[in-house]
Amino acid sequence: MKSHTNLTLFTFLVTPFLAASLLKAQIAPAPAASPAPITTTSSAQGDSSSATEKALAKAKDAVAAAKEKLGARKDKDSSAKVSGASSTVIALKDPVAIVDGTKISKADLEKAFKEAVASSNINPATLTADQKIQGYHQILDALIMEKLVDKKSSGTEVSDADVNAEIEKIQKQFPTPEAFNAELKKSGQPMDQFTSNLKKSMRQTKWMKEQIQGKDIVTDADAQKFYNENIKQFANPEMVKASHILFLVPQGASDSVVKAKEAAAKAAIVRANKGEDFSKLAMELSEEPGAKQRGGDLGFFSKSQMVPEFASAAFDQKIGSVSATPVKTKFGFHVIKVAEKKPAGTATFVEVKPNIIAYLQNQKRRAAFKGEMQQLRQTAKIENFLPAPAIITPASIKPSAPDKAPSSTTIPTKAPAAATPIPASPNSTPAAKN
Image (cartoon, rainbow, N blue to C red; front, side, top):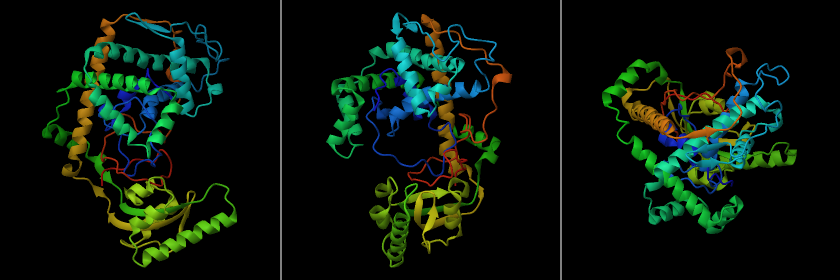
């Protein structure tokens, strides 16, 4: 795990407090992962998933956005070269910024940038100077906000008991105390530093919540109005609820391995048809991550959310039936049991009301938080020593890809279910609430 002691605000920006309901929720969410890395993020922020990933998300998006916007620009063709940025090696001043007398070092910025690039699967060698400057500026903006919030929240009280309780929650995400300690060692943080960073994160989160408290009130009438004006967004495709047992087949596996996996799947079908509890079979046999916790349950999903072979088999099966033969996909062999089906239709207001309210509340919180940040900036003395970013013209901005993730204004229609899907792609089109 990487330490993100300067990225606590990044975490706040992308955790549920501001973003949980901003994106249209997937009916079948992303695959489960191994225990979350040790982080300095409080679960008071409402999410037990990897806070390290969430902390990097803002920076990662910044780098990706800069690369996308400036992708058509070539250094040799650019008529608006950035001063000091004529190549991908950019000379930065140290410090890169001073916020009310507190310095943000060149090393801190470069570390955050490097980690963002690494986590975004972008090859650093492909970034132009303009793209790097864009990324630097967006990451530095978040670091500046973190400094401002840290100063304002310095008087907010967080008890040692609360911190210790939070540490216990984090430790419980790991199978053993030894696993937790190993991850802590891997992160390079001594326990006292980890505790200090966690307390800082909790303090900042508590302060920010206090600032926007009471500014997110949404009435039933507000929700009804939103539903009426956006009713087309609540249309549902045909849905199936199913469970599966997955026998993973590694890429490039030998014929003998493939045959063995298929034979294991056939044996599982025989056991299921003899009346053995399917969820228990999945917990025992499935090689899907998280199968032991969910018993192979995938929840409801549409055809577009699964790879074609899996979707076809599940939608063709009768309710209560187990697949007659193993279903082969790029992941391996699946044994599928269909529990329920829902026809296409439009979700009622009663069904989606809680999610609409949550969405509108988050919009208000986002606006309130933005206002707080603007006020903090206006009253602070901020010196930014980065080279000026390149001017982006309409001609230099590449059109968005068709499969780009939904924007923050997309209407949420269903909260994610605790299941692991077999997604057709990482950007499968989200479905409406079933």
